[in-house]
Length: 431
Image (cartoon, rainbow, N blue to C red; front, side, top):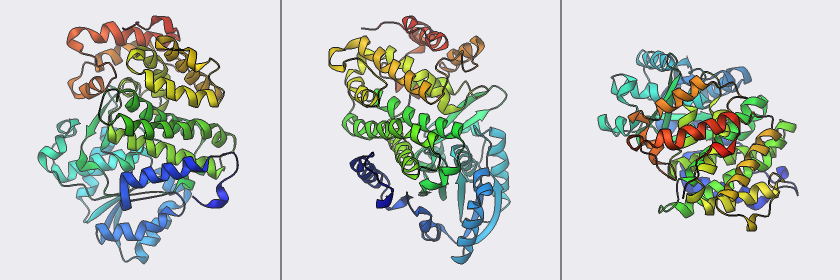
């Protein structure tokens, strides 16, 4: 990061360590931070000489798309065509449209520039255009590689701090009739090259900034919670802790002054570390619930509302994580209790209340009912939790749930009603 962007209020050590972790994660295949777009010609030339571009609205409105096309032309890379990206939540109809348009063009690689929905749509469309079939063939884990392990030739240019789709093996696609989101999870859809110049986010509206940042926290926290007893616990603990710290410290600053480039840089680093986290382990309960709320809530907002309540449910399995994350919230004045005197469920409730206080600080709803969710949505969430294509989310939980053993009704349902009402007492107490 440019030295002039640092000030005495920010720990330079956090920035430097976050940058080191991202370089460890992606090596030379990822350009991030200041002047990252200078790598556009080099990365594109590595992938081919003829490109199809999939563009989101932000790139068009801000002039970024125009700049990209001009730089590609200077690098003697032919633009075969420009395709509109997917709408928010990546409706499957958009994926089919993009796949059809890709089949009509001649290209060596695809450049997708946009937020998470645009990039997710590009990944899924490239799978369809190269492997054939229908989307349902690929929902779940490893289904793309069953057809071919060849990596999709995608240069992903991110424009929003949040999903980290530019770094990961995930593509979320939504059925807009049932309002249910499902996942394609496969190493073959990891973009081989990616760029995120963090200062392009200064024009992002406040609500998008909030939703993306809380999605980043959810990536970090859910993976970290689910890592107890696993061989990657220490690594994800460092990555997730730093990601959460950067976001909690800097989101209020970015909202107060949208052009605060240091805060924007920190949010970019923090949400990218969320992407690193979900490539080490997997998200679980918060994300699972959010997939059924696409008609009423943005993804990051749904996860943010649910996670404090699941934090209490999983208390027995996440005591180390709770003690460490509590320090972040205490240092930022969201947690008032003496951490050392707390343990068990009491510690989890203190952290959950701190998460809720943080959400209130940034103007987020803190219960499902406040956010416009209905009891019908809760029934939809309970039904979706039993879908075999989403089984990975149950297995990733700190305390895995087995639908056949009645865990959805016994554990998840009362926790969802706690999130609906804001009453932590509804959450089952586990040994």
